[in-house]
Image (cartoon, rainbow, N blue to C red):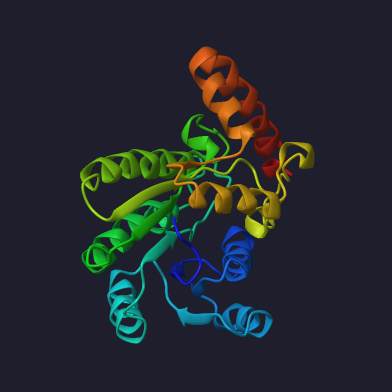
Length: 259
């Protein structure tokens, strides 16, 4: 995939993986558009990267996606790549009755529904381009349910399944479909967690996005580091062992929540 002179829209582009994508895609010579819900962080992103264009938008809101599409395609008709990166990950005890239905649904509408709706809205435009791409961000957890983050696990498995189906349906078109599959990555995604992840199990965000850039340039459908390949293999060979290993974290999380 040619990145230089491409026009790339990144949802959730003001922090973590999204912000690092902004940085490295800009270095590749791409014209970058970043979206986010928070106006302050959008302004900070624009100050840090003056050439980047920003739009305030929320992928969990269908009306906001429609408005984003109208504004972006009008101002940037050359848009040819979208990266569905906006995401939310929370540690949740499913026996916690204080969570109402709207709250428990929050990750689904951001991570899964938001990705599907963004693709549905922007696909007709992308199909008009000689070379275009969709990059959906799933997770290593798509191969291994993480009991501490049950809703997140479900959404990322859903993103993976949807992306595979999308790739098949678009196989004879000009639109390439990529799946970015990060392991645990050191970002602000975990800032509010009562149980912080083991830093030895986490990957630096710049190294992860370096893998992504190299994979895009080589047209690799799955953009993943070696760590994720190991998780994928282990999920086939010793799935129960892997699940139990991750579940130890939930027990720690539940004990911390009691305090």
